[in-house]
Length: 109
Image 1 (cartoon, rainbow, N blue to C red):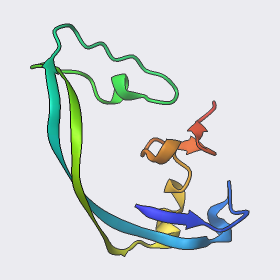
Image 2: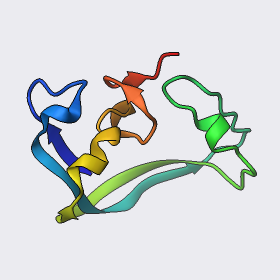
Image 3: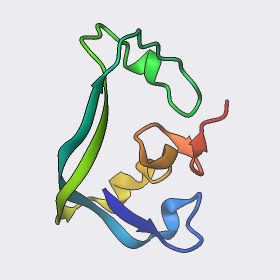
Image 4: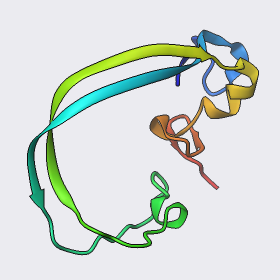
């Protein structure tokens, strides 16, 4: 997704966009510069910033590796426009994730 709210539109997207929401296709290519197997147990904990443990429970762990990529290239294409009104609820999420937030931070109760 690519969009830019109009100046002064935060936290209210009703003021419009400088660049309306679009779907962007990004194809990145990487090679493997270095890879090492890691033995151990993965434990996920929730935080207000990343509610991973409760939303994505770990069912099994097959293997884990430390990996150092080498960048090979990237292709970027605008795929199409999104409905600006329907997209408004998603303009204020945590750091570009899909978790709902408030001005870039977690929702407060």
